[in-house]
Amino acid sequence: MASKKISIIIISTIFLFSIISLVSAYNFGGYYSSPLDYLENPWIMFGIIFIILFGVIYYVLAKSFKNNAIAAAISLAISLFISMAISQRGLLSDYGGGELSSWALVIASLIAIAFFIRFVKESFGKVGVVIMIILIWIVLNSLEP
Image 1 (cartoon, rainbow, N blue to C red):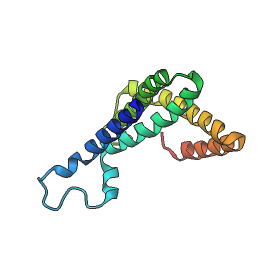
Image 2: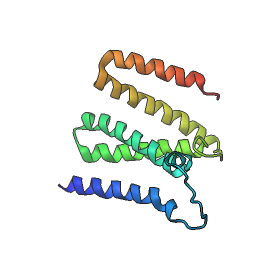
Image 3: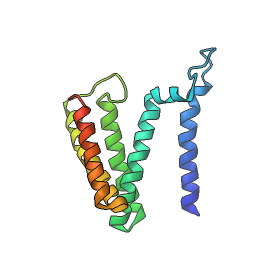
Image 4: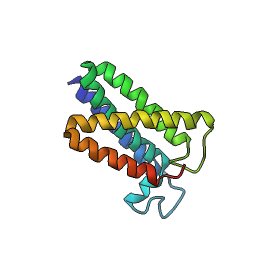
C-alpha cells in the first residue's frame, strides 16, 4: 500500500512539473500549439530518458539483488547520472559539455547498452539479444562522433 502511495506521488509530481509551462501567461497564443511541441522542451526529454532508463535498470537490478530498496537506489543514481550526462553533452539542447562529460557519456552509454541487452535477454531470449545488437549497431553507425 505504501509503494502505491509513493508511485502516485511520483507520477503526480512529474505530471505537475510537465504542465507548469502551460500556466505561463506571457504569450497570448500559448507556448505549446500541439502535444508534440512538448518534446522540444529539454526538461520533458530529460524526464522521458530518465524514466525509461530508471525502469529498465530497476527491472534488471530488482531481479539481481532481490531487494527492491537497494535496486531502486542504485537505479535512481545510475539513471540520473546517465540522463545528466546526456543532457550535459547537449544531446537534448544546444549547449555542450566539457571533457569529463564526454567520458561520462561514453561510460554511461556502455552501461545503458549492457542493461538493455540484459533486459532483452531476460525478456525475449537469444533472438531478442541478436535483434537488439543489430539495432544498437545501426544506431551507432548513424551517429556522427
